[in-house]
Length: 110
Image 1 (cartoon, helix red, strand yellow):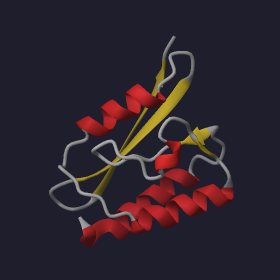
Image 2 (image 1 turned 180 degrees about the vertical axis):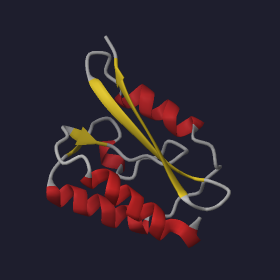
Image 3 (image 1 turned 90 degrees about the vertical axis):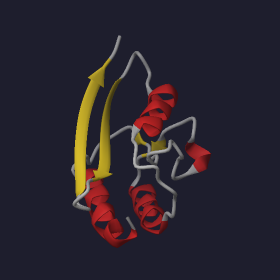
Image 4 (image 1 turned 120 degrees about the vertical axis):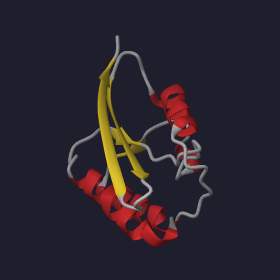
């Protein structure tokens, strides 16, 4: 995974840049650990300085992986889904070819 982390980080930067106006965002690993633990129960505010800081933190993030998105998706759904709001989920994953793959989904509940 370390060998392709630069490509994964570049993909994260692309996802952040193509969404210029959002109310907030969150980054978790596949095990459900938050990149910024202080924001476990709330959205990271969307400001240019915060986006830049998140990218820097992500670039240096060293976290163990069990190669399954299940735990991370479960944590994201429990902590960050509000039945009254619309939310977009974007998942970055690596495949056996070690290429980042992006999956995105928008959900409206209520």
